[in-house]
Image (tube, rainbow, N blue to C red; front, side, top):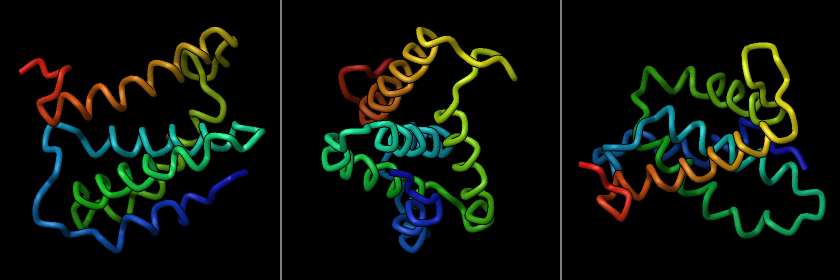
Length: 130
C-alpha cells in the first residue's frame, strides 16, 4: 500500500503557521525523516497489521512538520519528504551502494528508535541530555 506524499502532507500543511513549536529541540528535517520512515514502514507491511497502529505516528509527525515549517519552506517539504521516502524504500549504506539486508535492518531500526528517542529528549523525557 503506497501513500502518496501529497496525501500525507495534506494532513499537516493546512495547520501550518502555528505560533508555538511543540518540540523546539526536534528539527524539521527529523520530523520529515520520521514521517517518511513511518510511511515506508506501513508500505512494507504486506499483511496490513501495523497501519492502524501507525496512524497516530502519521498525525504526530505531520503536525510537527506543520508547526516547524516556515511559509517559504512549505514549497520544498514535498520534495524533501519524497527524497526521504525514496531512501527508506531502498536504503543505501553509502551513496549509490545498496544496503545489505543486515544494513537495511540496522538503518530502519536505528531510524525508528531515533524518531522516538529524539522526540522524548525534546520533551525533556528520559533521553534528555541537556
